[in-house]
Image 1 (tube, rainbow, N blue to C red):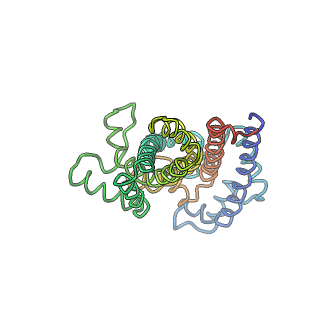
Image 2 (tube, one colour):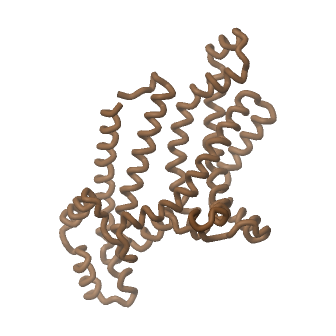
Length: 313
């Protein structure tokens, strides 16, 4: 297991190096634009060249990238061109906002998805139709449309929650909860749509297997069969969807944080991409790759714990 984990981490490092180098190379075609963004629209060609020299963007590409990657291995991700912030602390600071939304939404989505999926598979009828209706609505309506509708109803008309802004939990837990409520609801609707359908389908398959018939013939209560045996076996494929949902929610945060003016990782990544803030973009990519590797690794390890046949070595 330790060897497997180390191999996955090593592959993640290689992937991060490959992706960041390709990104660096692609952005090298817009170095003039980056310098122009820093200087303003009235900048002369001479001033742009001088700015590129100041930033080291006129050096051979491989030397630029080598300096950056060796700095990363030392823990130095560079300085933002536009805010002059060190990249690593800037990303970590904004991750706190995003995590406060994504983790709450993920926990609620997981609980609701398991409840809806299990009830839909084991009881069918009206419960099953309701669960499929929730899933259909979540798939059909984009996050942006849901966000706008909720803001109009609950923030503008009813004034129950603020339409924009963020208050740290340390300053006011109640204001923090109010600020993240609508963004969390938006992510939960989409998350439940994705995960509940997977739980339902997997549970239906499990409940039709021979071992369930044997357990029922022995007089074991349906509740025990569903929650102790079938749900445990259905958890393995559902975990794969959960891991994808974690990554998907971070992607959805780009839209959500811009709609609600939240100073999180998603809006930071979006604005940095528009500006061409090279050090920040590369730092964000490193985090993104690290997140994917970490989530997949944890999913594999939990899968191995739930299902001995799926254990990795």
